Amino acid sequence: MVHTDRVVREYGIRIRWTLFPLHPEIPEQGMELSVLFPNRRPDSESSRKGRIRSTAEELGLPLGEKRTTISNSRRAQELEKWAQTLGKGDRFRSSVFHAYFVEGRNIALIPVLESIASAAGLPADQVADVLDKGLFATAVDEDWCRVRESGIMAVPFFLYGEHALAGFRPFEDLAKLLGR
Image (cartoon, rainbow, N blue to C red; front, side, top):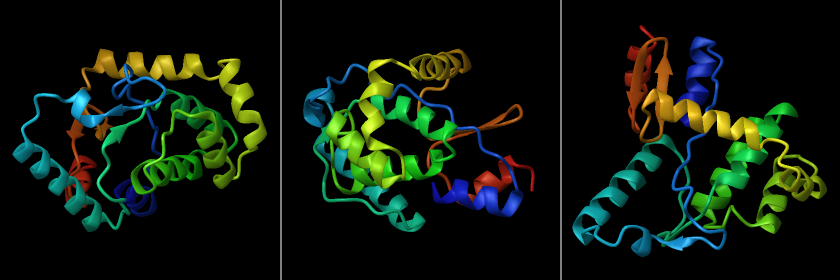
């Protein structure tokens, strides 16, 4: 998120966040990464995690200790759409990142989401109602459809006009994408 903050600050570009269905098959209780990726070789796993950690350090993003589980992010995505309507999308997105990647919390659980909403300045007592009524389910479905139709297969993915950039990249690559 640091690069996107810098893009907004230096180029005055408004970012349209589109949500991505990252492993929507994950159950509410989460899943061990070793179950999700049973054939991943240990050497490729440590290499991948090393890249993630070094990229996070380069960007000044905090990461918690070794995470062994993955959460279903669907509910958090619906709440992000809600937070956007209340002008708190960026704060909520940052709070979710921190809860998941730093604290290792399961972002599919209502009490966790209530805590995240509260940290972002949202009314935590409305979280369950927003989700139960599916107030932002269609908006998330539309984003998921958009990424499928666009052929997007991974995150982060940046699209500017007809040009795209995939993966964690140096800020200079984003600047090139923007034509500057």
